[in-house]
Amino acid sequence: MERESPWGALEVSDAHVHFFSHRFFAALAAQKPGLTLEAIATQLGVHLPPESPEKLGTTWTHELDRHQVARAALIASVPGDADSVLAAAHAHPGRFFSYAMVNPREWKPAPVDTVCLFPAMHRYSIHDACVLPIFEWAAENRRAVFVHCGVLSVGIRGKLGLESRFDLRFSNPVDLHAIALQFPGVPIVVPHFGAGYFREALMLADLCPNVYLDTSSSNSWMRYQESHLDLRHVFRRTLDVTGPRRLLFGTDSSLFPWGWKHQVFDDQAKALYEIGVSYDDARLIFGENLLRIMAH
Ligand SMILES: [Zn+2]
Image (tube, rainbow, N blue to C red; front, side, top):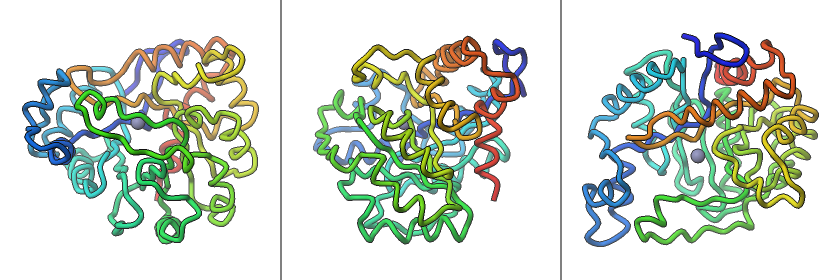
């Protein structure tokens, strides 16, 4: 399956889609007395996901088909929800990679493709002893580890009046330097170019060849930069440091009715094309890199 792009037909895989399952919504509802799943859907103006994760997976396959997107990494976005993405991936072979948010303090191995750490959300340092078993598991099983760094705001929590007691001090990509060197065979994915820690993310990627950056979201962190940055600058500077084999295209799509955020693709493809990225390099960034690190 290929999608129209400035280079012509291009196979596209999305490295960053949130799988907001029924269990995810139930976990949100449990955080505020009286909050029901229906109330959440109404307040957010979104579709309530079906109870069956396989069915939500089907919804996503139709959405990806509609946009000619070959595959997506689905992120279970609350600890304990790995089963949802595993079920969706199992029901739709070849379409999804299973990513699961974990809190390392209560982590149990599950056969997902990638474990996702959110140190600022769960308030631990990457240097904490609880993180080590996850990297050991990833090294043994040839899996990847995704580590959210930088600014973290979960928009839907705010809209629902839920507190977000996150701690930004645990979100510097520099914290990953030692563990990335200790586990050189484990691909480490830092989303959103470090979400505000652009320089630090590039420093880390320069020193550690196993560090990958994902391009997902609107990248509104660009407004924290001292001087004006646009996507073309961001891509050019990143490619100068990492080359084309360590960038993973992603959208950060999540909820319906919005579905797959094609605008993120359109904007990023345009920016990459304008700075002269070749068709071969575009194939890497828009899918082949993801497929390579997911092969195990
Ligand atoms: Zn995200």
